[in-house]
Length: 70
Image (cartoon, rainbow, N blue to C red):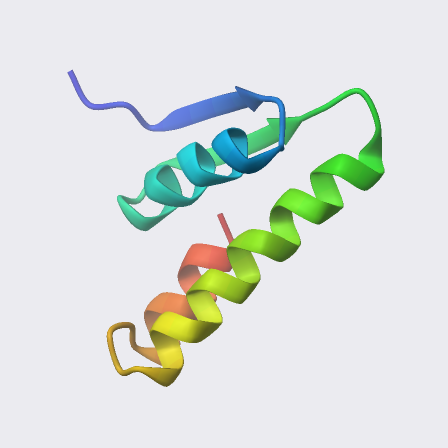
């Protein structure tokens, strides 16, 4: 069975990490938390990590944009 959509409850360190791994594998992810600011912080963590992978050449610009679009 292929997972296509995932909802992560909690956008802290672990939630953001789970979301990041899932989006890198092509899964559409929704993150939820008690406050939107926590979700924004989790998204920022993911953006920063993906940006570092892009700078190191471990991720193409196309993949970077596609991942952030999920």
